[in-house]
Length: 200
Picture 1 (tube, rainbow, N blue to C red):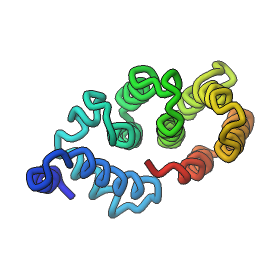
Picture 2 (picture 1 turned 90 degrees about the vertical axis):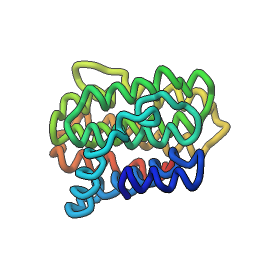
Picture 3 (picture 1 turned 180 degrees about the vertical axis):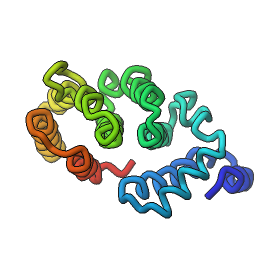
């Protein structure tokens, strides 16, 4: 689906631009994660030829549904393309501007966490230290996503045991990545296996 197609469909269904962009980004990032070269390369080429990654949906100008899902996947595309600053800027929008932890929006906290995990997965083959620092699993700097997981589990406070169990497993996995010598490819696979539960 191209930007032109999205525009044409949006004209037929006013207000649908965000949903159409989210759908395209879901398909494209799935191809990136699956290392489906043909689909991945076609998606990346197509989206890079459009202004969609600079749209208000993909840069924080829109904060209503489905902005969180769009930002999550836009950050992945930037990270995959080795635009680390742009990917991190989007994570800052999700974390600080939208601030779902302070607003106690658990579903959106999970989207933020998934975005950070997936961006770290893209970083690993390019810059493993940057990935570990983002996760908070670097020997040189603690905090990051591990701290977000702790805060989220404190917020849940036993009310959502299944989610608490998932986040506990994630925390263990992230700490393990910081203390073992996994190859970048293996580390990416581990991280991407965690976020399949969060489809938004």
